[in-house]
Image 1: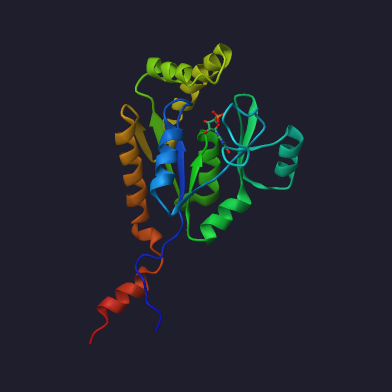
Image 2 (image 1 turned 90 degrees about the vertical axis):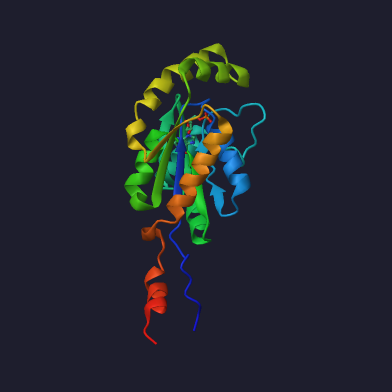
Length: 213
Ligand code: 5GP
């Protein structure tokens, strides 16, 4: 008889959102490095590549025409306009990762979180990361040195809009200490994995434990 394992479970779609500069990318990187069962969804975008970014790793950098084709061919799980550019989550790699038994991490905005939730509901866990203050957010954006003053101003203006959607998330955290914030995000992921509703083979396992004789 095959072993009935209690930990066979549904894959998770783990969304991390925050205003740019709140530390989400650092936390996502730490999470991926520390967790073999988690894979990153690489989005497609029409925005220009920043110095240091790698096509296919940070994003799939595509033209507006290619992006439109992908939308028409229903290749996206979700997509949205952000900062005047298009960003979208390709569907096929996410399905492949879930089929392999991996949970999938998404660095997407509130529009993406909302659309993903509409499609995959109970399999989606949404976490929002607040910066400790607007001053600190601006300081971090300037320290990155990758954006012009104009882009930074636009990102700051957008931060307020992004933050106003905080109540569309299951968890909210303040990133005033990146190590602590990372530990909190990792424990959210661990706890969500343990939810009874995600453990699909529990009935068989419980029967094997309760069978008389
Ligand atoms: P950045 O240009 O700084 O890499 O990202 C800008 C914003 O776009 C971030 O808030 C990021 O989470 C969001 N974003 C990145 N990829 C996607 C995506 O595939 N879908 C949606 N809806 N937002 C995305």
